[in-house]
Length: 510
Picture (cartoon, rainbow, N blue to C red):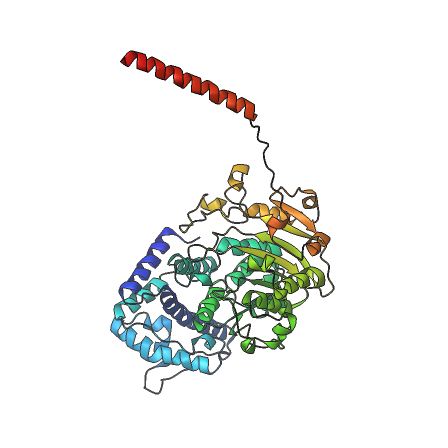
């Protein structure tokens, strides 16, 4: 967990960027990400040098060449371990005029280290600010994965709290709940086609570290984890850089984080590739047919991005693959032909497992939209028997724009152990617990409960409506009212008392 001292240093650095003219929160973290990438390149070469020295062999992968560059400056000056000791003005000259052009060359050459750096630019000219940022990063123990990951998560939280570009970040506790529901395995190939900061992929990696530590003791599963398991796509280069660094700092060496307009490009290359999809895609409204991938239009003929993303998930999943994805409420009950078609497809052609209704304040302060989590398995031959519904009414935070904690930190999230009173403020652990019983005791729960199951036949008869309120029964408390005669008699008594009081008052005044 990030310490108060480290938070204070990050806050000071953040304020320094703002006072130095870098006022967009996304630009601040982008510039810090560049510096972290530069430090990582030096760390990677140190590992190679140590290995070569121990084994008495030449360096296999040399990032920084030997000798001098074309301007006569030694390449070793471009390394973090060297320039961090320079005087601020000299450091600025080296980083801006030597290091960043070198990074762009790495990106142009297709290096796995430099692929996200091909457009890299130092976004400020304040030498003192650069020195402060370098010294702050240098002062952090980057050998500990937890520290690096927590540091980056704290900075990402600043994007959301600033209310700018917060749409790129799904609340961490919602992500963790979705990962707990899907239970990633060491054999999974996991994808987020709208990755943003790669929060879903990071959480899946952390889940595997906690539940399957043995995978790192086997060379094959360890290589799968570091190079083949995690795939994230986005069409914003800034988010790709931030997402790639987020995964790297959480101990995933070489994830596939790449540029892709997921709704526009054809998917022949990776159709049926992934066994698990975790996503909260941006629902921007409508796209023209001409700019939408034809293979998605073949699944559902629509311009609506929320429906196209569902088609995309089905296209990318392998048979038997599962998904947990966030959708706007309109997907659940929309009456258009396309809405009904995609819902019928999930229920009849595949296996719709659950609809988890989220409270409308989950994405405040930057969005008040009502959403739900759909959990389904791609089968191609049906399989839906019952659909499990859960009505989440509290997620541990206030549902206004402030999103203030309602419980202590240890009582937050989906893994907390709560009392009945605490459950009223955080439903997420109960969601995970009851999900495990969806094929057992949950089948017997009444429709008045917070969670219950609905048979497929009833959903089909309702036009595949998946809105929770369609099936939930509200239990009204019996109200006992007096008869009209008793009420009239009471009114007459009151009227007589008032008249008597007025008469006494007149007698006194007369």
